[in-house]
Length: 245
Image (cartoon, rainbow, N blue to C red; front, side, top):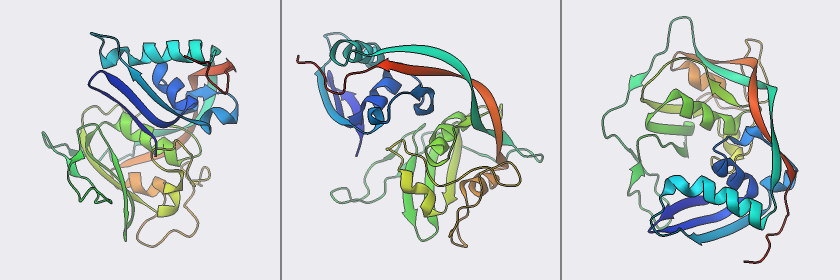
């Protein structure tokens, strides 16, 4: 499992790809990074002491230095037309539940974690039960929902609804779409536009859970296949092994 965090003056990244590091270093999304396939597959553990007096806001700059110094990263930026799904409101308008102040979603019980803790405001949690796969958020924006849905679709989901604020979500869809994994950055199984401009229904989905496209309709939203200009970071050179400290 990929873990990325910083506390007590230490940066600890476990099982991360160089694509993960580039994403954080340059504050961009996975789909904005172009390069060889191995940058998303080769994994590293990174442990580093943050300089005295530094803050987590400085982590992207530190990662930029690490990628340049240890992995010899060079890149260029372009703006390209990119196929996307636009997250927009349906004709009747969105049907959103405003988030409760201070709300949290209880964490799913796991080995060694009997359900303590929860998901903070802005966070999202993935769980699967007999209803299907759930993408839950106690309080998050539509922009963040779009980012998370992008992990399960064949193209990025971009919030173009114009709706501001934090809302509660429980997006339920067929478990087959969750095979890419929330933490893995992989694409799921919504395989392309259906007849109404959204991802096609997932083959073999149960009666209880449909496609990701169906899951957003519950909230008066839809996914429309579009093209939009997007900044792309293209990797020109990157070493597969870091140089010594």
